[in-house]
Figure 1: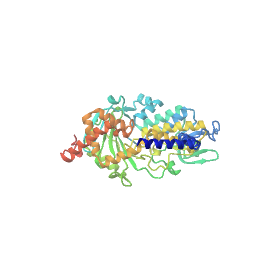
Figure 2 (figure 1 turned 90 degrees about the horizontal axis):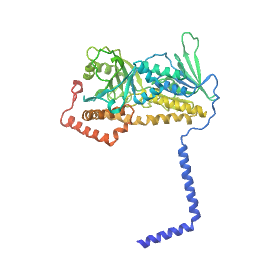
Figure 3 (figure 1 turned 60 degrees about the horizontal axis):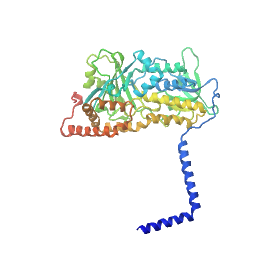
Figure 4 (figure 1 turned 90 degrees about the vertical axis):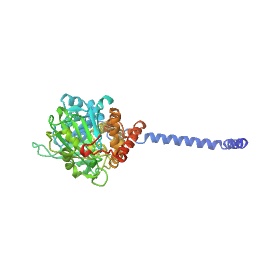
Length: 499
């Protein structure tokens, strides 16, 4: 055996000596090819270092960027762009303060950016933000847990801020940073001049004191006009209507029995959707209901968007947990509703030459939780960073605007697929939520804090797959399966029979 091996080695050595020049050339070629491949891979996606619109080439009557919509995403983009010296026009079809309908929950990643903008300080100074501590959820089987997450996390996972206050403070912060805020500017169209490299954004509805529409020109168009996004639809980037929906009704402080800051109620009928109660300053509450798209076309699980009013009002009257929290004397406003575009639904792209789409207009709402304020603010900052980079290089082609999509994918977009999978799982297997609540009852706030971190984008959804999290949850599922299917201990949510 050894002699045969020696013979093979000798033959190989002789072959190498006889073909030394050819082998050397092949080695050099291989090294060069590998180096070229690695270099191209490193440069893949890198934006051009220069472009046709260098600094100083912007016409006097034009802006570096025009932002259509002064909600959380648009105002964030305006703030950071203006702060870095860009000439910014921020347009909104209404005048501030103006209201928007949603759950009003602002998660930790957004809180940090709001602090950077000075907005959170303004909200707190004016008693317009309430930080949550006591929170939890009620599972489809009626298993509930309410804990205190701040002690475990070191900070509140979320706070409640009315959109009428949040949007106003953010728009005014953008204006203070140098953006030109133009209110009552209802955009009816936008045209791009390739020769000049400029967008012209038009309005046909104006203040009563004006006789004609207005126009704004800019190098970059930022579409931030909400979930229905008339502009993105008109330009062909959005191809379908939003499929999700949410409700909101404020409850007057002092008229209810609620003693927690935020609780989600997972009624089996409307899974993967849920209802929730969030506490605002001055003991005011926000009761909301989210219907998350899943299953057949037009359905949110087993219900349709048109069922929202029935579910919202039915939960107030008939859900034992909600009825107990609100009490018999709660003064509740009439339900209001808004559309939800989740997980990029209906968007062909979020960028193009001289254009980016952000916030709800881009479908940047988590497909599991329905939360979109934090993604709007994070994405708005990513859009500003892209605009700043393009103004420096003078290139506004899709090779440069693509930076924005890479940024938002790295921040939160990577999690959308897992969120969709999570929505499918809890719809098909509600026992998973029962098991989570069961485990919280056993482990207390340590498990509750992990849940809060994932649901508020402090950790990715894949965190649930870590062995130290997945194994206890796996045993909890087995326990809950035994309780419900074998021991016959399943609870009746509708009769407040939870554990």
